[in-house]
Image (cartoon, rainbow over all chains, first blue to last red; front, side, top):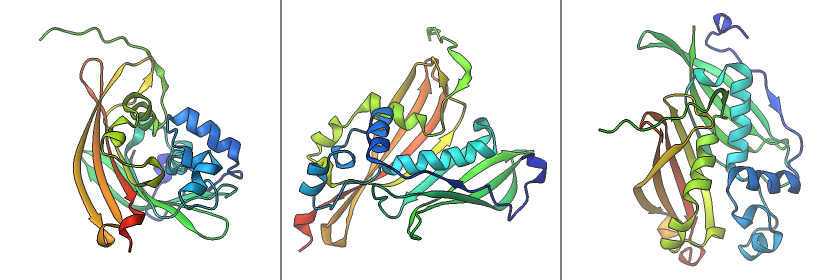
Length: 136
Length: 112
């Protein structure tokens, strides 16, 4: 999208992800360097009182990063912040969404502030956040 | 100050927006949590922030400076929070990004 078209209320094209499998979690553990066994080893998850393994929070943030960089080039992103509000169970199907809430002039540049969220198919919101993006 | 060699790497091959987190995980590891006697099974990620100064790219050598900036407990001690900032610089000392993470440590024994 040309950033000329961006205005308050503009919605980013939603990003629907495939099901998060155990393989996804194993690969993300290796890719991210987060080897906490709670995400990949059912025995460890059960020993800590969980029914099953659950996804790394940063996997969802990485998906949200993909939503952003599908929309604007990486070097336009000034900041990116999230709060993890619920765990993402294995086999969940997250969808990332975002919306422009304000446009401001900062240091002579136009910057859009986006509200971001990740929701599962059952409506659980697992992550909320915001990003500041340079636009022209 | 001595000018350090700052290899250019591959500036056209930018890293993902959460790539600095990966650098932190792989570079700093979890030994500091062991030092704090945190059972890694009780660890949850509460918040994560990135402020970007310049694009990180393939072939760069980066340095990470993590600092614990806050620690507090909630729910009568059942949840403990640790806030850690990590500054990321390139080999010349130019800032790449500032990270802030809030980690939540469940304390099941305290929740009585």
